[in-house]
Length: 357
Ligand code: NAD
Ligand code: IPM
Ligand code: MN
Figure 1: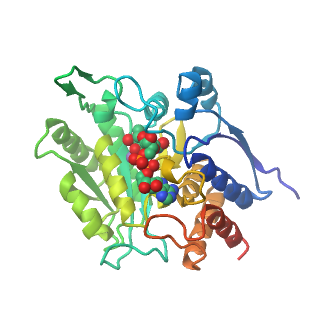
Figure 2: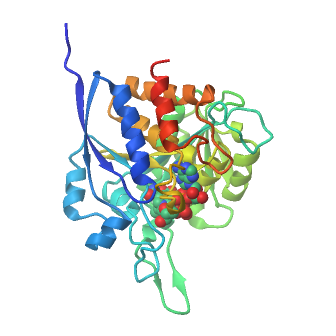
């Protein structure tokens, strides 16, 4: 008996800098993994800094409306430091438009140490935690709204009760689905804040406790953000799930990346109740663009998160297993500067070859 393969319409946003080569890698891997089991239909959509330069908008209203119609979105990094607005901020970014516009209130950033990665840490323990970054408010709500003149400038940090409740609840639910921290197997959610200094972060912690009480099976844990930065480097195996305000999550996820082989190892899911999109945590790395130097693992693992989100858990598992196998066998080796030793294309091929092994 033959069955009709599941079919999914997927939007691709290749983006700027290394974006197009990474999205190309991820599509190759996803297509090879899907085989004839899953029918993936890709459509390329135009957005980012180069789009802004050509059209005057980083993403048009028509494109935004179309994006809502896809089953999933795979986005490459966007932005070019030279493309800026009169207020001095970058013009080609999409965070405000997509994270705010699609209300993807969670930015889920798994930090997993793969076999064979040469890491700059003394610890030999495993690293496998997830940063749950609030994605629609916090300091970033001030995006485009800063006030100032030649003498002073201000951006406000805002937390709302429903905004904090929903992201904290997501973190506890995620901890329930995971196997606990590598160090001790304890299911744990760490609240990261600066509630020693700022009222908004004390509010965040208070709501963390209120929600956490509904999850007696999960350990509640606390770190001030500065100490969290230290412990993510010194004792990463302690962590399971961490939840934090938007700006803190931006910074600490790049800190975590440095302990697992660099930014090119790290995918992210922007997840809401009615929309989601998947991308690397890093940017467009313009200085290495087009030179076969970028590590495509972040984008390939973002594609695996997309597959999971589409309900294709087997496909997601196949991609993750092939990535792990390519690292374990030494077919992908990451240099201290974050580039794959044999190049972007060869690293992509190593993952595809791992499907047959
Ligand atoms: P970046 O993440 O692009 O680069 C930081 C460093 O990491 C650079 O040395 C770069 O070469 C390296 N790097 C990044 N990804 C890599 C990969 N896959 N393989 C190997 N090395 C990699 O950060 P940046 O230089 O601060 O920003 C560049 C542009 O990207 C800016 O316009 C910024 O606003 C934008 N940005 C976009 C996103 C996004 O689209 N989600 C995220 C972060 C930064
Ligand atoms: C990220 C990026 C974005 C952020 C920028 C490009 C707007 O650094 O996704 O981590 O700061 O959120
Ligand atoms: Mn960032």
